Length: 206
Image (cartoon, rainbow, N blue to C red):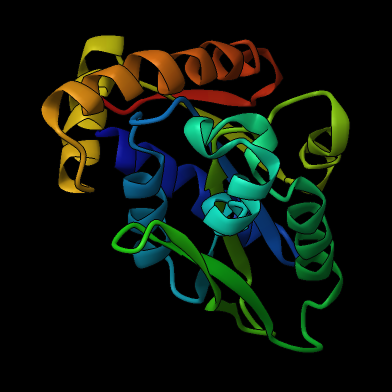
């Protein structure tokens, strides 16, 4: 079975056994393939919905004000408390009301309010991002809200190639793209790798 088939089968079995909404998390280093797996999972299970952690990026204006624009994507460049509050709403509002959640638009490199919706009757919510397993700060409140957390693994050289291409597509020069991948993304990847121990299963996405 492919990694996608394994993931879909595991989540489907757990969903069938649960009488309530499930919130499933995918965590991993930048470029590991979290978003691709998350979208595939949502598209494979009827009634599933998507809640990306990337929607909780601080705006570029906020990052400029805080002096963090040059390290966007680091752990302190997100609204972690807002993400946790939204997860609480997703858990508590099942069957009661729709929950609108922000998206992240790579074209403008900004979060977009209400870019996604978790319908009231959605049985499965798939969330993904870099820091779902961190055990400190507001991030520590994420793991208890997830029914299952999967670590998405991928060799560093494959991840780096993906990230450099992503940054070039976003408008950086090849030199700047490589520097960002090595100077910003890689330190984040090392922090994320330490959270693997808190995950329920590891998926080899490459």
